[in-house]
Amino acid sequence: MKDFNKAYLSIGSNLGNRYLNLQKALLLLAKKVGVIQKTSSVYENGAVGFDGADFLNACILLETSLAPSELLAQLKDIELSFGRKKNNDVGYASRSIDLDILYFDDLILNGAGLSIPHPRMAERNFVLKPLADIAPQFYHPILKKDTRNLLQECKDKNKLEKTEYRFYKNRTELFSQLQFLAIEGNIGAGKSTLAKKIAEDFNAKLVLERFADNAFLPKFYEDQARYAFPLEMSFLADRYQQFTDDTSQFDLFKKFMVSDYDIFKSLIFAKITLQKEEFELYKKVFNFMYNEVKKPDIYVYLYQNTERLLANIKKRGRDYEQNISPDYLEKINRGYLDFIKSHPHQNTLLIDLGTLDFVDNSMDYEVILEQLETGIIELKS
Image 1 (spheres, rainbow, N blue to C red):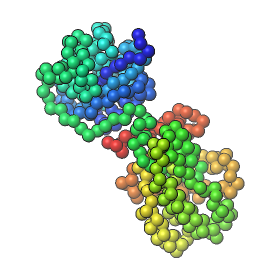
Image 2 (image 1 turned 180 degrees about the vertical axis):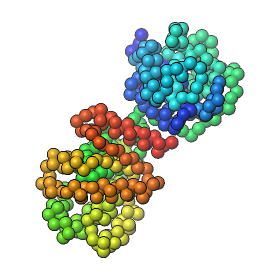
Image 3 (image 1 turned 90 degrees about the vertical axis):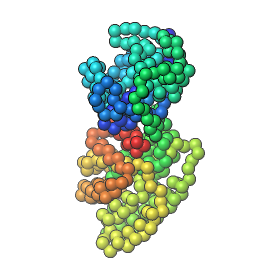
Image 4 (image 1 turned 120 degrees about the vertical axis):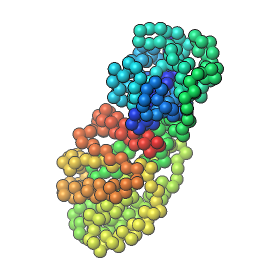
Protein backbone atom coordinates (compact mmCIF):
# COMPACT_ATOMS: atom_id res chain seq x y z
CA MET A 1 0.00 0.00 0.00
CA LYS A 2 1.25 3.51 -0.84
CA ASP A 3 2.35 5.91 1.86
CA PHE A 4 -0.70 8.07 1.13
CA ASN A 5 -4.09 6.99 -0.11
CA LYS A 6 -6.79 9.15 -1.63
CA ALA A 7 -10.18 8.79 0.01
CA TYR A 8 -13.35 10.53 -1.12
CA LEU A 9 -15.78 11.11 1.73
CA SER A 10 -19.38 12.25 1.92
CA ILE A 11 -20.31 14.41 4.93
CA GLY A 12 -23.76 15.51 6.04
CA SER A 13 -25.68 17.03 8.95
CA ASN A 14 -29.31 17.87 9.72
CA LEU A 15 -29.28 18.51 13.47
CA GLY A 16 -28.29 21.66 15.35
CA ASN A 17 -25.97 24.14 13.68
CA ARG A 18 -25.40 22.06 10.56
CA TYR A 19 -22.58 24.14 9.08
CA LEU A 20 -20.80 24.26 12.43
CA ASN A 21 -21.04 20.47 12.66
CA LEU A 22 -19.62 19.97 9.18
CA GLN A 23 -16.76 22.43 9.59
CA LYS A 24 -15.82 21.04 13.02
CA ALA A 25 -15.83 17.54 11.55
CA LEU A 26 -13.50 18.67 8.76
CA LEU A 27 -11.08 20.13 11.28
CA LEU A 28 -11.12 16.89 13.25
CA LEU A 29 -10.43 14.94 10.06
CA ALA A 30 -7.49 17.23 9.31
CA LYS A 31 -6.21 16.74 12.85
CA LYS A 32 -6.69 12.98 13.22
CA VAL A 33 -6.93 11.39 9.79
CA GLY A 34 -5.00 13.17 7.06
CA VAL A 35 -4.71 16.19 4.79
CA ILE A 36 -7.84 17.57 3.18
CA GLN A 37 -6.97 18.33 -0.43
CA LYS A 38 -10.32 19.40 -1.88
CA THR A 39 -13.76 20.39 -0.60
CA SER A 40 -16.93 20.65 -2.64
CA SER A 41 -19.61 23.28 -2.41
CA VAL A 42 -22.17 22.77 0.34
CA TYR A 43 -25.64 21.66 -0.77
CA GLU A 44 -28.97 21.62 1.03
CA ASN A 45 -31.55 18.91 0.45
CA GLY A 46 -34.49 17.25 2.13
CA ALA A 47 -34.11 14.12 4.21
CA VAL A 48 -34.21 10.95 2.07
CA GLY A 49 -35.90 7.79 3.33
CA PHE A 50 -37.37 9.32 6.50
CA ASP A 51 -39.08 12.44 7.85
CA GLY A 52 -36.51 14.89 9.18
CA ALA A 53 -35.00 18.33 8.87
CA ASP A 54 -33.11 19.31 5.72
CA PHE A 55 -29.51 18.21 5.38
CA LEU A 56 -26.36 20.07 4.45
CA ASN A 57 -24.17 17.77 2.38
CA ALA A 58 -20.72 17.98 0.82
CA CYS A 59 -17.81 15.82 -0.33
CA ILE A 60 -14.09 16.03 0.37
CA LEU A 61 -10.89 14.52 -0.94
CA LEU A 62 -8.62 13.34 1.85
CA GLU A 63 -5.04 12.07 1.69
CA THR A 64 -4.37 9.59 4.47
CA SER A 65 -1.83 6.98 5.46
CA LEU A 66 -4.55 4.93 7.18
CA ALA A 67 -5.89 1.66 5.87
CA PRO A 68 -9.63 1.56 5.00
CA SER A 69 -10.59 -0.16 8.26
CA GLU A 70 -8.55 2.36 10.27
CA LEU A 71 -10.15 5.24 8.41
CA LEU A 72 -13.62 3.85 9.11
CA ALA A 73 -12.80 3.53 12.80
CA GLN A 74 -11.71 7.18 12.94
CA LEU A 75 -14.89 8.30 11.17
CA LYS A 76 -17.03 6.38 13.68
CA ASP A 77 -15.12 7.95 16.58
CA ILE A 78 -15.73 11.43 15.16
CA GLU A 79 -19.43 10.66 14.74
CA LEU A 80 -19.60 9.50 18.34
CA SER A 81 -17.89 12.69 19.50
CA PHE A 82 -20.83 14.60 17.97
CA GLY A 83 -23.29 12.52 19.97
CA ARG A 84 -24.31 10.06 17.28
CA LYS A 85 -25.47 6.77 18.78
CA LYS A 86 -24.25 3.47 17.46
CA ASN A 87 -27.79 2.18 16.93
CA ASN A 88 -28.43 5.06 14.53
CA ASP A 89 -26.44 3.06 12.00
CA VAL A 90 -29.50 0.83 11.56
CA GLY A 91 -31.96 2.49 9.18
CA TYR A 92 -32.24 6.22 8.49
CA ALA A 93 -32.39 8.91 11.13
CA SER A 94 -31.45 12.52 11.76
CA ARG A 95 -27.88 13.04 12.84
CA SER A 96 -25.54 15.85 13.81
CA ILE A 97 -22.84 14.37 11.60
CA ASP A 98 -22.71 11.57 9.02
CA LEU A 99 -19.39 10.50 7.48
CA ASP A 100 -19.17 7.91 4.70
CA ILE A 101 -16.32 6.55 2.60
CA LEU A 102 -17.23 6.75 -1.10
CA TYR A 103 -13.96 5.76 -2.74
CA PHE A 104 -10.58 4.65 -1.42
CA ASP A 105 -8.20 4.97 -4.36
CA ASP A 106 -9.61 2.48 -6.89
CA LEU A 107 -10.09 -0.21 -4.25
CA ILE A 108 -13.00 -2.66 -4.41
CA LEU A 109 -13.85 -4.05 -0.99
CA ASN A 110 -16.86 -6.02 0.22
CA GLY A 111 -16.73 -6.70 3.93
CA ALA A 112 -19.20 -7.16 6.75
CA GLY A 113 -18.71 -3.63 8.05
CA LEU A 114 -17.32 -1.79 5.04
CA SER A 115 -18.02 -1.80 1.31
CA ILE A 116 -15.98 0.33 -1.10
CA PRO A 117 -17.14 2.00 -3.32
CA HIS A 118 -20.15 2.96 -1.24
CA PRO A 119 -22.91 0.63 -2.47
CA ARG A 120 -25.65 3.32 -2.67
CA MET A 121 -23.69 6.33 -3.85
CA ALA A 122 -24.88 6.09 -7.48
CA GLU A 123 -28.50 6.35 -6.27
CA ARG A 124 -28.08 9.66 -4.46
CA ASN A 125 -27.78 13.01 -6.17
CA PHE A 126 -26.89 14.66 -2.85
CA VAL A 127 -23.71 12.56 -2.98
CA LEU A 128 -23.00 12.71 -6.71
CA LYS A 129 -23.52 16.46 -7.15
CA PRO A 130 -20.89 17.56 -4.57
CA LEU A 131 -18.63 14.71 -5.67
CA ALA A 132 -18.79 16.06 -9.23
CA ASP A 133 -17.40 19.35 -7.91
CA ILE A 134 -14.12 17.73 -6.87
CA ALA A 135 -13.91 14.48 -8.90
CA PRO A 136 -15.94 14.86 -12.12
CA GLN A 137 -13.80 12.36 -14.03
CA PHE A 138 -13.15 9.82 -11.30
CA TYR A 139 -14.24 6.40 -12.55
CA HIS A 140 -16.35 4.10 -10.44
CA PRO A 141 -14.22 0.93 -10.41
CA ILE A 142 -17.29 -1.35 -10.63
CA LEU A 143 -19.77 0.63 -12.75
CA LYS A 144 -16.99 1.90 -15.05
CA LYS A 145 -18.51 5.37 -15.31
CA ASP A 146 -17.24 8.71 -14.11
CA THR A 147 -19.05 10.95 -11.65
CA ARG A 148 -20.60 13.16 -14.33
CA ASN A 149 -22.17 10.20 -16.09
CA LEU A 150 -23.40 8.72 -12.83
CA LEU A 151 -25.03 12.05 -11.96
CA GLN A 152 -26.72 12.30 -15.38
CA GLU A 153 -28.12 8.79 -15.04
CA CYS A 154 -29.14 9.12 -11.39
CA LYS A 155 -32.90 8.59 -10.87
CA ASP A 156 -32.89 10.57 -7.64
CA LYS A 157 -34.52 13.88 -8.58
CA ASN A 158 -34.99 15.27 -5.08
CA LYS A 159 -34.42 19.03 -4.88
CA LEU A 160 -30.82 20.05 -4.23
CA GLU A 161 -29.74 23.66 -3.65
CA LYS A 162 -26.21 25.02 -3.60
CA THR A 163 -25.54 27.20 -0.55
CA GLU A 164 -23.08 30.03 0.05
CA TYR A 165 -21.24 28.19 2.82
CA ARG A 166 -17.55 27.50 2.32
CA PHE A 167 -15.19 25.18 4.12
CA TYR A 168 -11.75 25.71 5.65
CA LYS A 169 -9.43 22.74 5.28
CA ASN A 170 -7.56 23.15 8.55
CA ARG A 171 -7.38 25.37 11.62
CA THR A 172 -4.69 27.63 10.19
CA GLU A 173 -6.80 28.35 7.13
CA LEU A 174 -9.81 29.03 9.37
CA PHE A 175 -7.92 31.44 11.62
CA SER A 176 -6.56 33.20 8.55
CA GLN A 177 -10.08 34.38 7.70
CA LEU A 178 -9.87 36.83 10.57
CA GLN A 179 -8.50 40.31 10.22
CA PHE A 180 -8.24 41.21 13.88
CA LEU A 181 -8.57 39.12 17.04
CA ALA A 182 -8.55 40.88 20.42
CA ILE A 183 -7.85 38.93 23.60
CA GLU A 184 -8.90 40.64 26.79
CA GLY A 185 -8.93 39.73 30.47
CA ASN A 186 -8.30 40.91 33.98
CA ILE A 187 -4.87 41.63 35.39
CA GLY A 188 -3.02 38.30 35.51
CA ALA A 189 -5.50 36.36 33.34
CA GLY A 190 -2.82 35.48 30.79
CA LYS A 191 -4.04 37.50 27.81
CA SER A 192 -0.54 38.52 26.67
CA THR A 193 0.75 34.95 26.91
CA LEU A 194 -2.18 33.59 24.92
CA ALA A 195 -1.85 36.30 22.26
CA LYS A 196 1.84 35.45 21.86
CA LYS A 197 1.15 31.73 21.51
CA ILE A 198 -1.55 32.29 18.90
CA ALA A 199 0.63 34.75 16.97
CA GLU A 200 3.48 32.24 16.88
CA ASP A 201 1.37 29.19 16.06
CA PHE A 202 -0.76 30.81 13.36
CA ASN A 203 1.60 33.39 11.85
CA ALA A 204 -0.27 36.45 13.10
CA LYS A 205 0.95 39.99 13.60
CA LEU A 206 1.26 40.54 17.34
CA VAL A 207 0.04 43.78 18.93
CA LEU A 208 0.97 44.06 22.62
CA GLU A 209 -0.10 46.70 25.08
CA ARG A 210 2.85 48.83 26.21
CA PHE A 211 1.70 49.02 29.81
CA ALA A 212 5.15 48.38 31.29
CA ASP A 213 6.47 51.67 29.90
CA ASN A 214 3.79 53.80 31.57
CA ALA A 215 5.48 55.99 34.18
CA PHE A 216 2.22 56.58 36.05
CA LEU A 217 1.42 52.91 36.69
CA PRO A 218 3.71 52.26 39.70
CA LYS A 219 2.66 55.62 41.18
CA PHE A 220 -1.02 54.75 40.69
CA TYR A 221 -0.70 51.60 42.78
CA GLU A 222 0.84 53.72 45.57
CA ASP A 223 -1.71 56.59 45.44
CA GLN A 224 -4.74 55.82 43.28
CA ALA A 225 -6.70 58.99 44.03
CA ARG A 226 -3.87 61.27 42.94
CA TYR A 227 -2.67 59.42 39.85
CA ALA A 228 -5.86 57.83 38.47
CA PHE A 229 -6.73 60.57 35.97
CA PRO A 230 -3.25 61.08 34.46
CA LEU A 231 -2.79 57.30 34.35
CA GLU A 232 -6.05 56.69 32.47
CA MET A 233 -5.47 59.60 30.07
CA SER A 234 -1.94 58.43 29.30
CA PHE A 235 -3.18 54.88 28.73
CA LEU A 236 -5.87 56.16 26.40
CA ALA A 237 -3.48 58.34 24.42
CA ASP A 238 -0.98 55.51 24.07
CA ARG A 239 -3.62 52.93 23.09
CA TYR A 240 -5.14 55.26 20.54
CA GLN A 241 -1.77 55.98 18.95
CA GLN A 242 -0.80 52.31 18.95
CA PHE A 243 -4.09 51.17 17.47
CA THR A 244 -4.03 53.72 14.70
CA ASP A 245 -0.42 52.80 13.93
CA ASP A 246 -0.44 49.01 14.32
CA THR A 247 -3.94 48.00 13.23
CA SER A 248 -4.00 50.20 10.14
CA GLN A 249 -0.87 48.60 8.69
CA PHE A 250 -1.25 45.02 7.51
CA ASP A 251 1.82 42.82 7.36
CA LEU A 252 1.79 41.03 4.00
CA PHE A 253 3.69 38.12 5.55
CA LYS A 254 1.19 37.60 8.38
CA LYS A 255 -2.24 35.97 8.24
CA PHE A 256 -4.10 38.27 10.64
CA MET A 257 -3.59 40.46 13.70
CA VAL A 258 -3.92 39.42 17.33
CA SER A 259 -3.68 41.83 20.25
CA ASP A 260 -3.64 41.35 24.01
CA TYR A 261 -6.08 44.21 24.57
CA ASP A 262 -8.93 46.18 23.09
CA ILE A 263 -9.07 49.93 23.46
CA PHE A 264 -12.48 49.75 25.16
CA LYS A 265 -10.67 48.55 28.30
CA SER A 266 -9.73 52.20 28.82
CA LEU A 267 -13.34 53.08 29.62
CA ILE A 268 -13.77 50.00 31.84
CA PHE A 269 -10.76 50.85 34.00
CA ALA A 270 -11.52 54.55 34.01
CA LYS A 271 -15.02 53.96 35.35
CA ILE A 272 -13.54 52.05 38.27
CA THR A 273 -10.69 54.40 39.11
CA LEU A 274 -11.99 57.91 38.34
CA GLN A 275 -14.27 60.22 40.26
CA LYS A 276 -17.63 60.96 38.62
CA GLU A 277 -16.63 64.38 37.21
CA GLU A 278 -13.32 63.05 35.96
CA PHE A 279 -15.01 60.10 34.33
CA GLU A 280 -17.53 62.25 32.44
CA LEU A 281 -14.70 64.34 31.00
CA TYR A 282 -12.70 61.24 30.20
CA LYS A 283 -15.66 59.61 28.45
CA LYS A 284 -16.04 62.52 26.03
CA VAL A 285 -12.44 62.16 24.90
CA PHE A 286 -12.73 58.37 24.79
CA ASN A 287 -15.86 58.32 22.61
CA PHE A 288 -14.16 60.47 20.01
CA MET A 289 -11.14 58.17 19.86
CA TYR A 290 -13.12 54.92 20.03
CA ASN A 291 -15.12 55.80 16.94
CA GLU A 292 -11.88 56.05 14.97
CA VAL A 293 -10.13 52.81 15.88
CA LYS A 294 -10.42 49.36 14.31
CA LYS A 295 -12.84 46.95 15.97
CA PRO A 296 -11.96 43.24 16.36
CA ASP A 297 -13.69 40.50 14.37
CA ILE A 298 -13.85 38.51 17.59
CA TYR A 299 -13.47 39.84 21.12
CA VAL A 300 -12.21 37.13 23.48
CA TYR A 301 -12.56 37.64 27.21
CA LEU A 302 -10.54 35.34 29.47
CA TYR A 303 -12.49 35.06 32.71
CA GLN A 304 -10.57 33.99 35.78
CA ASN A 305 -11.60 34.00 39.44
CA THR A 306 -9.97 36.45 41.83
CA GLU A 307 -8.04 33.81 43.79
CA ARG A 308 -6.18 32.56 40.74
CA LEU A 309 -5.64 36.09 39.44
CA LEU A 310 -3.89 37.00 42.68
CA ALA A 311 -1.76 33.82 42.46
CA ASN A 312 -0.76 34.67 38.88
CA ILE A 313 0.08 38.24 39.82
CA LYS A 314 2.26 37.04 42.67
CA LYS A 315 3.95 34.49 40.42
CA ARG A 316 4.98 36.96 37.73
CA GLY A 317 6.50 39.19 40.40
CA ARG A 318 5.95 42.77 39.25
CA ASP A 319 6.61 44.84 42.35
CA TYR A 320 4.02 47.52 41.61
CA GLU A 321 1.25 44.89 41.25
CA GLN A 322 1.77 43.08 44.55
CA ASN A 323 -0.61 45.29 46.53
CA ILE A 324 -3.57 45.01 44.16
CA SER A 325 -6.64 44.24 46.25
CA PRO A 326 -9.15 41.44 45.55
CA ASP A 327 -11.92 44.04 45.51
CA TYR A 328 -10.22 45.95 42.69
CA LEU A 329 -9.90 42.79 40.58
CA GLU A 330 -13.55 41.91 41.19
CA LYS A 331 -14.61 45.39 40.04
CA ILE A 332 -12.59 44.93 36.85
CA ASN A 333 -14.24 41.58 36.15
CA ARG A 334 -17.69 43.11 36.66
CA GLY A 335 -16.75 46.00 34.40
CA TYR A 336 -15.79 43.68 31.57
CA LEU A 337 -18.90 41.53 31.99
CA ASP A 338 -21.10 44.66 31.97
CA PHE A 339 -19.38 45.78 28.77
CA ILE A 340 -20.04 42.40 27.13
CA LYS A 341 -23.71 42.47 28.16
CA SER A 342 -24.15 46.01 26.87
CA HIS A 343 -22.72 45.10 23.45
CA PRO A 344 -24.83 42.10 22.36
CA HIS A 345 -24.03 42.59 18.67
CA GLN A 346 -20.29 42.32 19.22
CA ASN A 347 -18.79 38.93 18.39
CA THR A 348 -17.75 38.08 21.93
CA LEU A 349 -16.31 34.78 23.11
CA LEU A 350 -16.13 34.41 26.89
CA ILE A 351 -13.72 31.68 27.95
CA ASP A 352 -13.91 30.60 31.59
CA LEU A 353 -10.35 29.54 32.35
CA GLY A 354 -11.22 27.81 35.61
CA THR A 355 -8.33 25.44 36.29
CA LEU A 356 -6.99 25.55 32.72
CA ASP A 357 -3.24 26.04 32.44
CA PHE A 358 -2.69 26.80 28.76
CA VAL A 359 0.95 27.78 29.37
CA ASP A 360 2.28 24.46 30.66
CA ASN A 361 -0.46 22.07 29.52
CA SER A 362 -0.87 21.57 25.77
CA MET A 363 -4.24 19.87 26.26
CA ASP A 364 -5.59 22.94 28.07
CA TYR A 365 -4.28 25.14 25.27
CA GLU A 366 -6.11 22.89 22.82
CA VAL A 367 -9.34 23.40 24.78
CA ILE A 368 -9.03 27.15 24.30
CA LEU A 369 -8.21 26.81 20.60
CA GLU A 370 -11.27 24.60 20.11
CA GLN A 371 -13.50 27.23 21.73
CA LEU A 372 -11.95 29.93 19.56
CA GLU A 373 -12.35 27.68 16.53
CA THR A 374 -16.08 27.35 17.25
CA GLY A 375 -16.43 31.10 17.66
CA ILE A 376 -14.82 31.78 14.28
CA ILE A 377 -16.99 29.16 12.53
CA GLU A 378 -20.14 30.65 14.03
CA LEU A 379 -18.99 34.07 12.86
CA LYS A 380 -18.63 32.71 9.31
CA SER A 381 -21.94 30.84 9.32
